[in-house]
Image (cartoon, rainbow, N blue to C red):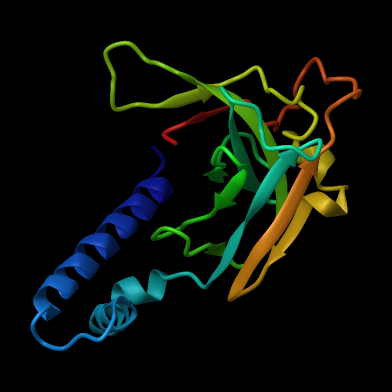
Length: 198
């Protein structure tokens, strides 16, 4: 794990722990809401507040030829940098059985850092890793024939580029056209082909 990724994980863990601590401490002292407790925590911890990113909620639904994704496949919506796409899963959300997805950065449903992203969609199957029950990995081949998992191709499709701005975008609908399309035999160099730790 890179130092940056480690710091990001540590920040998330610290924020979670301190928010819980603040809530427990405030149970009898009149905290009106979780939001107020979080704001008080950030006010009292300026070093952590300085690293806090401005988020925009991002959620929606993925369909395949107008229908929910097929069973046995986990569909992931992956966000990448449209100017400098990189391989691997950076920011992703798993879809439920109906294709609904919701991004999180610090807590469930809070969204992603504001900015422009190229969207990748991939359908993967869960792989069991012997002897390592805590690790979950999803692997290919892509259920959609590598048609939507390549940021280098997707950045030229305006329906697969999203500009996330605060506060919300909860209606992002993506209908993948798969039936009758020729699959891509070899995924691109930056295409998402597996996800670990989902």
